[in-house]
Length: 105
Image (cartoon, rainbow, N blue to C red):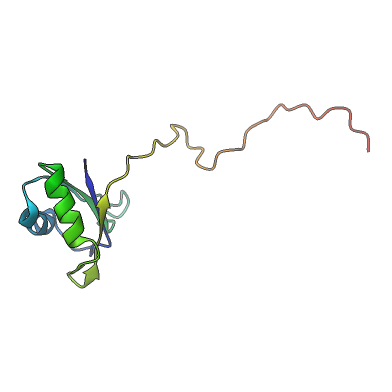
């Protein structure tokens, strides 16, 4: 299981996150995604702890807590959604060779 941590300040580091979550158990991993183009932190991250009890304790204690001037959003991470392999983000489109039938105007 993984914990989602949102509304993080952009200057936060993995060490900062590790420090606050270590109060509730052993932190196995911290992941802070960055923007591909700018390299800037995206304002959220993920934390994995060594047990579900530790994760539950951290979620209960930190969700809504003010930290570094921001109210944290902390909950169980949802499974990552698969994105389409092609560049077609909006769905739909295509069709190209559809038959329109015998329309007379």
